[in-house]
Length: 157
Figure 1 (cartoon, rainbow, N blue to C red):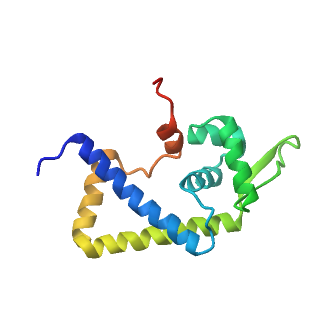
Figure 2: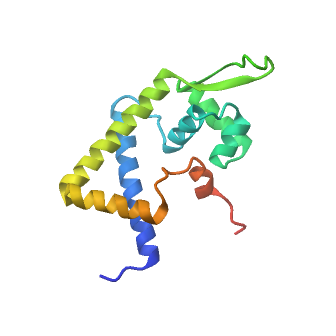
């Protein structure tokens, strides 16, 4: 079979979508029907030190206004809270709540279950080989937090 570069890119994206769509569906069944992929990116960025809308915007490669809207949604859903900054009383720091971490853990469990299904479908060694080969092609780094902004950016079209 002779596939093109676009075919490969779309297959990789389809694999990502299949895993994420299943996670979103199962999270909804677990009572988190409001969880979205961008929320995962945002909560992980906050857990890794993005403490304000400006910092979250830079981390996700989105505008400060988009980051502020995302923060508001996450706060309304109880996934993120803001608390006074002990270093600067004028500032508030974002923190992921226990509920937010619970949603992240549940999502990870769903993705791990999907990985096990794929290992059963094509074989553990085949899947490990695929993962190793992808890591050698794109690097061993997990997906970057700025992916939501990268996917939505205006390229001047």
